[in-house]
Image (cartoon, rainbow, N blue to C red):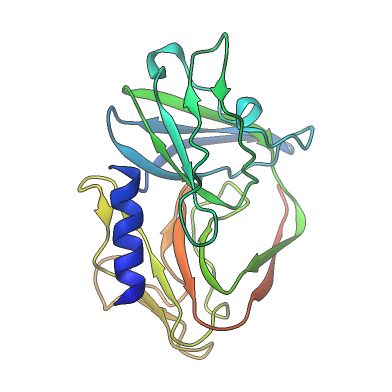
Length: 224
């Protein structure tokens, strides 16, 4: 209940979902992902590509058009939302104040208009490392693929995953729970149930509640 209350307050504090990312294109190891944004709605997003120059400042990685002036980004800071809330001031200025968000981490984007966010970057390849800390954190796929995540063998028994409902602007009531690597994840048997976890499209993010020790794990991925 305490976790649910904290997550509920977190959503309320932001003021307003997992946005469904569409149209993934890649050539060799560099590509882009298009994300559809809806006016006056929160999208729970991530960067599914690595910046080519290793610069994850949002002015470099999350570039909006001028219809989005006044849009905001909200980042989870471990126990609460970061008090540093960047605002988009247009292509001539970018975001202020600045913020750094690495790929594989989630953030809320409060959109000011209907538009498309294009995320450009390098497709991570080889062995990709993750670490889920104890407590509350945001989690996302570091690669631009649609897959159930984080996997059947990843989790501590009793861990939960919360997904964002874009249409209703709230956390989905179908909470995912981990039952061990022989049973995997379960969301109560509602639509999308899969022992490997919730289906994440490129640029989707989730809230992960880890009730025990940190969880390191890896993915192996190669662009063919």
